[in-house]
Length: 217
Figure (cartoon, rainbow, N blue to C red):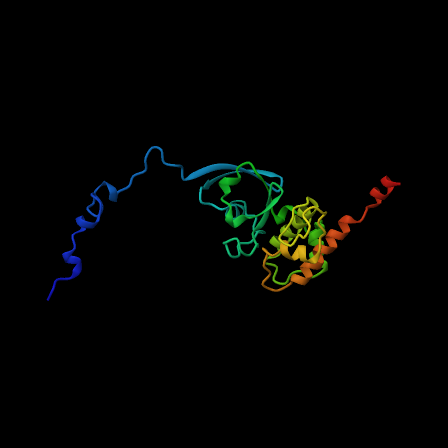
């Protein structure tokens, strides 16, 4: 009977020198030029400045939730596919689960906690309540953050995949809203109510206020 294959193979024939023999290659040591494992960063979150000492692998979402206990932004898929973790960074919406916190040293971050309070709701939050634009509520913070950003993106003239005429002013149509909100998933299926809430806020923002009417007289 032939001996087992493993006993007939010589490690030295297949592995580089030092590997598998307990040599230096099997015991990697940190060199003097190795990158640090932790970094001290500063974030301005909802108008408050925070200095954090973080593992370099910490995501922005985990920094917000675990270090600053701002748990409004939710961890859904943790792969940037559901939008539950959407926050604003320097005025641009991002998926916080896909960003390393160290990438945003010195940046201004806005989470749902900074958008409004229970006794002073942001217009988008009030519209979500009025239109029952949620059920379980898990995705709602990210939905609201994205919804507010959608209106600002259209005002800024930023086109989407469904924008027909790039040279004309962008109209905030149902198709535009659906396309721009497509990265935010509502597993309860409150999409039609979310759409209605966004339209209400967009239309009310376009209506002139009393101060504007007086100024234009």
